[in-house]
Image 1 (cartoon, rainbow, N blue to C red):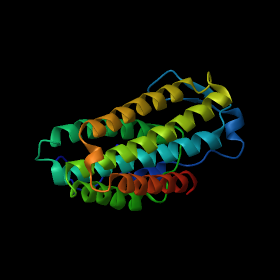
Image 2 (cartoon, rainbow, N blue to C red; image 1 turned 45 degrees about the vertical axis):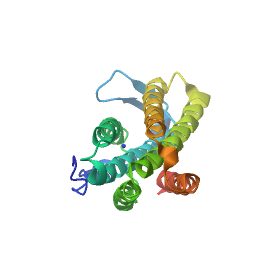
Image 3 (tube, helix red, strand yellow; image 1 turned 90 degrees about the vertical axis):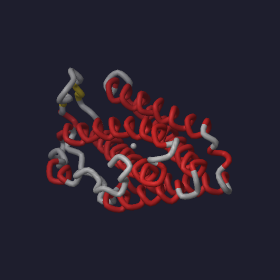
Amino acid sequence: MIGCAGAAAAPPLWRLSSAARRFPSGYARNASIRFCNTGMTYKNINHATVDRIIRVDHAGEYGANRIYAGQMAVLGRTSMGPVIQKMWDQEKAHLKKFNELMVTFRVRPTILMPFWNVMGFALGAGTALLGKEGAMACTVAVEESIAHHYNNQIRTLMEEDAEKYEELLQTIKKFRDEELEHHDTGLDHNAELAPAYSILKGAIQVGCKAAIYLSERI
């Protein structure tokens, strides 16, 4: 979801590609999968659904981390630095969790990770160059899109089997609530005063929808 040197290299996530492999055909129908660090066990999971959710959420949290890295590169030494850093720290925790889930469920990352690496940083830095209001407008747009996306995932899992997916649901709900806190932080720091706020927000959210669509599938 580097410090002030935001242009530093992104975390070495590519090793997940070799570690994350699909289960053999039919595995999901008989699977009993235990999380590495919890007592949660999934029986007869819908692997296609879980695979899609974890891959896109991992990509989204990675992109959010790169956005905040870009914002910190520009605004890290200003009064907004601590505000951005606090949100970034939460995004780092989100990404760490999805890194763990990627390995647990052997989900491959989206092949677009190098693209999200560059585009996320560019979006964060570019909007921050518009001033703190521009950075916060970006935060509002992105976090609103992510929260909406998480709500859709929550509905999907609850409709399928809320008890079976209880721990994954709790993780997504917790992260959704934190994304909404970031959204509100952006509004509290004058996001709506950014130049052409409505146009900027709309354009960013179109990009978010495209990123979600692609990351779920490839």
